[in-house]
Image (cartoon, helix red, strand yellow):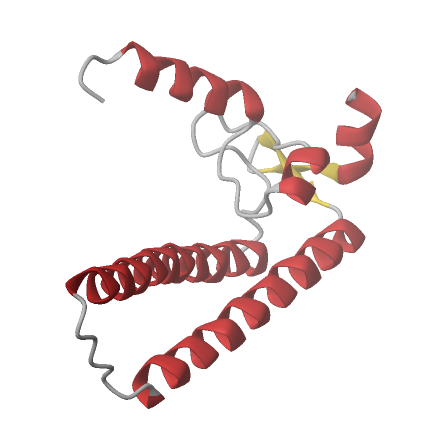
Length: 143
């Protein structure tokens, strides 16, 4: 695992401390993954908007059919809202890639592993910090 991290990042001495910077080829791979995912999400969002705005109001004599239609629409809108949030995260992550801040945990400042970034390119925390965060969330009552 250490060799993967060393292959993924290069250390540079900056202002008296060591900062790890992602290697260019890995950054390009992950930027391409993010860009592709962003394009797919935007394309699907456009199709949904077009489909929902083009749909004529349907009249159902049966209230159950109407309720079913409304439930389906509400579910679709919730999914699309989550996708909208993901689009924002991807855009923020692409900005981090450009600013040389990508791949560094927001909590501990350590590198985020290549495997984690390939699975979840918008990750902002390393697996150890994310695990701790999730354990703390489970420990809080009422959530």
